[in-house]
Length: 241
Image 1 (tube, rainbow, N blue to C red):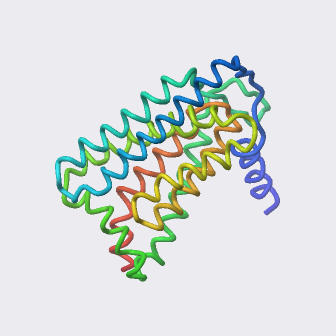
Image 2 (tube, helix red, strand yellow):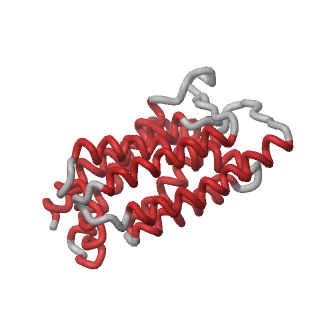
């Protein structure tokens, strides 16, 4: 039992706790500009998201609105200043590799936890109703298109929240502040469980951003979780409901 526990502890430290060395300093002027762009992008993105989530399932406007939302997050992120992919700490102590395997495992673990939670959600109508309403966009629309938009928006959200916004916060509490901001934005969905999911996902990806110094790990974890939930949550709810 000792070996697996130690392995898990080392994995958590490498993936979510111990930052890798890097130097991403920027001038005061560049930092101020990043903050302005980040705030403007947040306001526009929140407005577009609120509109997109109020489009009825099956309405073609949903695809256009979610596509526009991805453009807002991505353009705002790239306009704010340099973004970094980040690096991971390996088992032998190196930190000159891109984070790929670690965030994939973290995403799968998150997915497993939320699918287990589906057992409870499926049996509580007040919780399941809003989730079903959100999933109706995939049920009554084009699943491949919804999946593609889910992936594109997942990438764009990480470019902004764990890229531009994280850097714009500065050194004081960037994980906490970006997690709160991300959860607050998801509140426009009107789905309480999605707000909880946003808080958990935002915290995990924020820790990954802090550790790796970049956006690659958060993107991989986000895509693994979000696409897995899109494809596996509906059958899980039906199986346990």
